[in-house]
Length: 464
Image 1 (cartoon, rainbow, N blue to C red):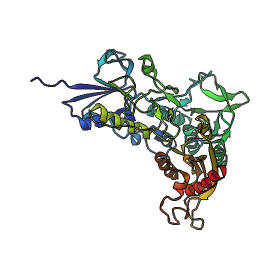
Image 2 (image 1 turned 30 degrees about the vertical axis):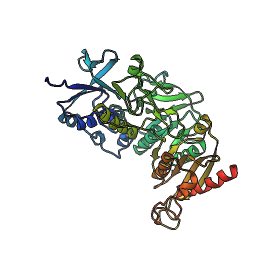
Image 3 (image 1 turned 90 degrees about the horizontal axis):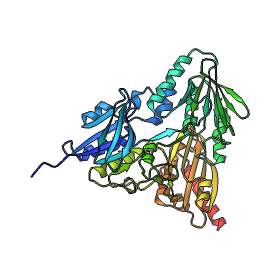
């Protein structure tokens, strides 16, 4: 009886989802059974993109501190990891991918038995005059972070250094903090009226007020029209329809979109947000030997029942674990998400999970909302800090639909209570009965989330 042929697994993308899949597959199947080849077009693998603002701001040494596992560590485990190698085409019918060496430009076709697409997301970069000028930076990869730091180093010693951040989502507010910590005068230009569009506008207003209090100028309703440059081609200002904002450096924080160019060209199925569509095993729909995970896919929102693009490293790592198990012959599923995310700008913590008001309206849900003011600790205990909790609950049933929290120390991670409740399909009345930990240094007798839930119970009863 002949020796069984070794299967070949090819992975496109060397960050969270791709390398988690590779590592999990290797745990389950040895090098004699499964050959694993991973292609990464950048210089780094298995890194925390979420940590880039804190590296830029000086809170974290990097980039090495942001790398969870080096290329050498992956190779020692029997994973053929090829850096600076870009996949330029997928041939699903032929079971192969075309790759190009970034250094030599040489191209070749590589066959696979199983393929994992983990191409991540790309920063939204509108086609504006001057958008490619020196001093204008996106922040998506460690290479991007290094390029921005190089610019900041060049500007060291410049008096009155000014930075403009375009966009006020997670990356925008985190980069605003980083640049403020670097001693820059920071202006944030936001298309919406309030920062953090992942929150309802009334909660976003709290973030706006806090940013203003920190000395960050936040301009709402600002639609950027062009980037102005000097005679040397460097950025000098950002223009909107109404004004010009001087800038020595510009950071684009306008969100990301799924990087699915290869998938689209290969005819793989995409959803409304442009992300790849998969089944519960993270297998691409209609393709027996192709899986996908991370920021390039859409996932099921367990609250709304719709598929959404939610680019977060937490999801990407879980996708990779599921994919790795399945490609190695094991079993795993990824049931979906509730849309939990936390962030901060200086000492202000920001959290959300579940649906916003407009999300609930978009899927036809009828709901009530409540907002409460509470504190992080017992009011008499030193260090008690205020926080605002907003909660959405379905009319009649009282099912929790969403929760948003803005406050100081101890605020953000409280959203995890609501995240668990959403995943379990709990009602706000059931939340009021949860046996949560209490001591004055950690919370009031009634945790702020339960205070909001109590008020939501009353609102549901009144609404009938």
